[in-house]
Length: 314
Image (tube, rainbow, N blue to C red; front, side, top):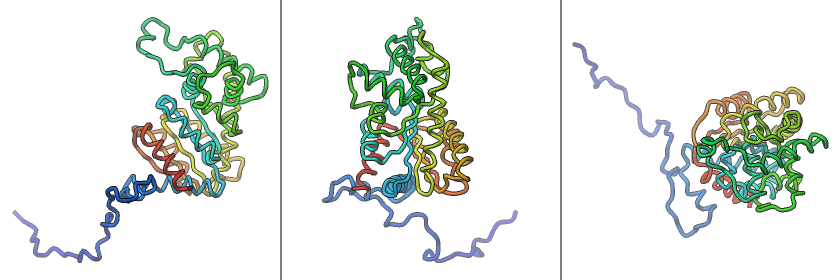
């Protein structure tokens, strides 16, 4: 039987071999400087740590150049207590648009209005009480009807409703209220039948459709600001926001001669999903720009990201 003679193998000097990792890329242990900026610099310059810093730099650059920074949210972002750090980005004028699915809006409204959210689904499903909280469904659906009559979007309608509510448990924790008071567009993208407030006696399909479709048009308008250096982040939405973003982006490009182009897209979630990868990270940046996937728990990664952006800007 034949064998390869290894004596015939050609080798090359290690000095001319391209390397993916160099000693200078390694992580550094804590030193005399214990600041957050020093922590960021101490991260290894490899793989997702490198991507993380690139995303931070892109957001900071977009803020400095007054480009769009659009944050899209799933409900888990609100449930894990991350509204305060995102509100800080809004307060500093870094975020230009917040878009969220219906569950995020419900959790945000309940925290602001009543101080708690996220019920026991299994227990409530057993006896048919899941999602049947009267105040949540009644007040939010009333806000949609009033919003339809006043020509408001769903997010704006909820912001106004909270601002006019007789009592609020935690107004400082509400993205809806912060956006309303700061004058930042916040859109809510409903999925009929997928949200607990749609099973309430006060549900009005016309009002839900009218206000949420207006928000879809507002998101498409806001995406124009992404052109040439903006950033769009999808935080924890596996289906609704990636699908909405793809359609809103094609509208924006349709009416703006192919723009926006040259922006950064980021999907940050606990696990990888098909729609965020294709509709946020890959397809929108095929011709220009750059897409990133960062995997990690929201309650850790989102504060890290926000702190890093603020540290970079300061």
